[in-house]
Amino acid sequence: MGRYVVRRLLQMIPVFVGATLLIFLMVNVMGDPIAGLCGERECDPATAAQLRKEFGLDKPVWQQYLTYMGNVFTGDFGTAFNGQPVTELMGSAFPVTIRLTVVAILFEIVIGITLGVITGLRRGRPVDTGVLLATLVVISVPTFVTGLLLQLLLGVEWGWVRPSVSSEARFDELILPGLVLASVSLAYVTRLTRTSIAENRRSDYVRTAVAKGLPRRRIITRHLLRNSLIPVVTFIGTDIGALMGGAIVTERIFNIHGVGYQLYQGILRQNTQTVVGFVTVLVLVFLLANLLVDLLYAVLDPRIRYV
Figure 1 (cartoon, rainbow, N blue to C red):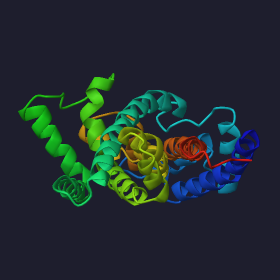
Figure 2: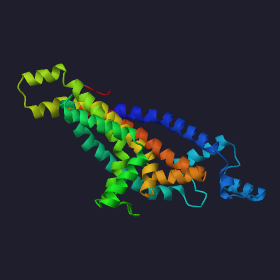
Figure 3: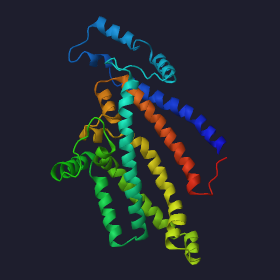
Figure 4: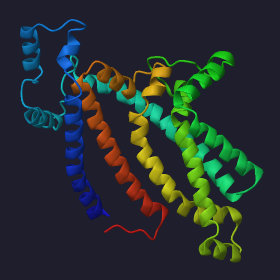
């Protein structure tokens, strides 16, 4: 196991370098960031040259990338065009988005897997059909429509939850945004769990456990569920990074100043340092989440061994 983890960590290095290089090149060719600093008027040539020199934009792109990566390994993600260090923006944005992601993942695990197990054990029955139709509707409706409807009904009309989130973004305030953020993924988790449960239910090892007279609960939890969760864990693991980086719509609806909000502002203002810095951290989140998923395979299925 130890050698496998070391080998995977070493494999992450070229993936991390390649992903950050691609992001750096894409962000630097999407427009002139200096032009955005001057508003609607064209920048004075002397002022533009001074700004380019100050932010290192007068150097070749490859040299800018090497300088940026060298600073990243020292914990310096650059300075935004407003003079604020990107690490300060991360310090205020990432804790909020992490709490929002935790709430969303809990919804996926608790509600999604529970509904998937129920429908998988009752395949073809009315409850199965009803849940399939409901998840299909959730997948079909855009997130901004779901978010605005739930905000209006649960927050404004019925008053069950807060319609907006304060600057502290406590866990109790993130229940509704977390549900909105997790809605589509929750539907996929439900359908994926249902399919996996229904398929494994007809497997030989399940029939053998039933023939031995084992209790139904033990058959479901110890035999059926553990093997059925492998594809579900894969989806949820890769979804962690997607939720953190794809929360732009949800954070805009509920006025949450998290990672999605900062990315939106960075793209809108062509603030390359902010965009590249935040996406660099998200790449690390994706890589670590995938490593954690691979390690969980051995926990779920004892037949899997890493050497």
